[in-house]
Length: 160
Length: 160
DNA sequence: TCAAAATAAATCGCGCGCGATTAAATCGCA
DNA sequence: TGCGATTTAATCGCGCGCGATTTATTTTGA
Image (cartoon, rainbow over all chains, first blue to last red; front, side, top):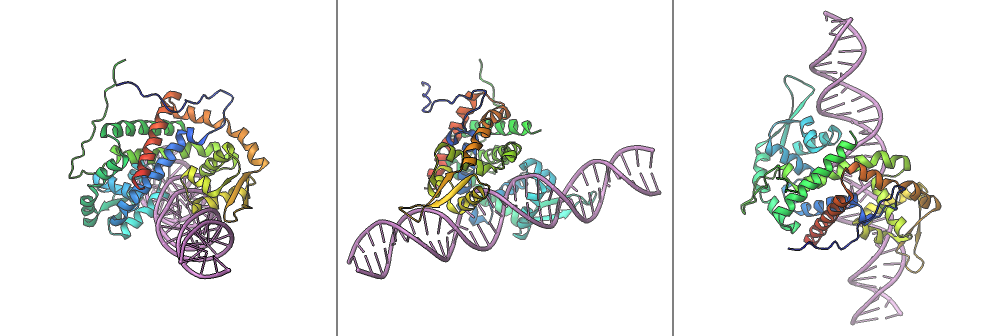
């Protein structure tokens, strides 16, 4: 078990600044990996009638049913200007219902319909398919997930 | 130097499938990290008059001037339906010019203007700013970049 | 030679993300 | 109690990503 030598040399970043290079950028790696995930998910989610962001909302609701738009936004790091039309499309597709809160009429509670709960059965095979597409061990994926989530949290902290 | 214990237990994925969970998903980590990058870049790129995808195209051109739409697409993993309007906006902003190829008139060559080359000077400080926002060592970032790019390549290979 | 196939970019429509703003309900506090 | 401040969601406009299609050019092979 010897350490594999890094195939590319690590770039230096002097204080004066450097030329930003595409394939040396972590941001571009994350950006293009996001595109790649979308392309893997597309043929898997199309038969379910979901887009990828809609799938994320459904995941949040399968985990905890009946959540407010604001709560979903905190989980997904999205605002109501993104979530409201997305959730309306999920409602139009029959997966969720939207209802104003009784105690606080500013809030809108999003709940799964029977059809929405049923969809979880068909979705349960998705993590396995992604695991195969990623072509990495569960351990590797889990470590990478932690690193990327940590990066996200650092970046979020940097803009307050 | 002892190994830090993983704060979260690694999930099992039995063959029958499991409930997909948001914060255990590598895809969501990448998705939300992408959102976070965008939010860090916004206040940095706004003064330059660039969006984040436009900045990526400029990076590609700063590295190699005069590239075809197809070449840029291969570098950035984007198609002409995304790049054409984006590049037209860069042209309208005065950063690039577009010209049909002389030998093959189907191709459109994108070249930097003087203004576009000038912009590199103001952009050279960006990697440093991002390094600070990420709050990680250069070594950590470089390793993570490699892992995420490797994941992207595996995912791309999985959809041909 | 020349028409069919292939290739490159552009066009169109839709669903995000998000900054800015608006509308409505609740809260706070004099 | 009442009125301004705050909170919550919704609305609007713009720039991506991308599937599907179109247009223009080049390549091909009978």
